[in-house]
Length: 223
Image 1 (cartoon, rainbow, N blue to C red):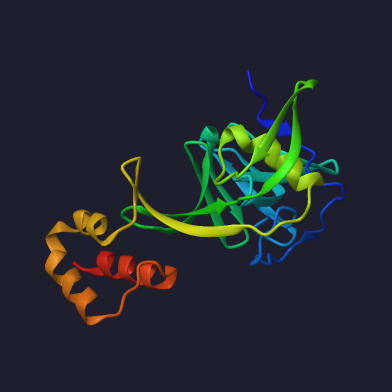
Image 2: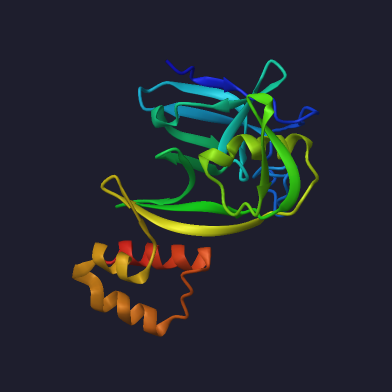
């Protein structure tokens, strides 16, 4: 049985702590956390338990990390986690991915930070023994198979910039679908004409988070 918290020593130096969260804007392989400092937060489980911890979110690894006994730990068994709150940010785990919860009313609007991390380097990665090596090249995107290599890079490799793209989703009836005008209108069939009129009269860019949430708020305000 997996332990709830899996030990992961990622950094060579310990992070500082903060009561007031400050979001990171420029992500690199070494500066890959959503917040510049580990911040006090609350982890809430589906069984009703809540744990206070000093938390951060790794955009590179798509993992929730917390501090315990001067060590960086990974929050495991995400299927048991209902919500992680760090300051004003709510993180919502679903199918082993971590999303940011932007809106909740009749459904949820989620944001996923997709990392496009491409590097080309003659670099040996050890798998189990010194005789088992592989050259890693042209890595694009993050998946489970790349996890250990990326953790190693985050800890010891050269600091390199990360391209981070925001992707938006609708979570309704335990189903996750990409955010689009078409999918949004499906949820508001009775008010389709009013919403289409609103879209035609307002310059709404659904790739812009503020505009997207403004549109969603309008859709849910119609009686």
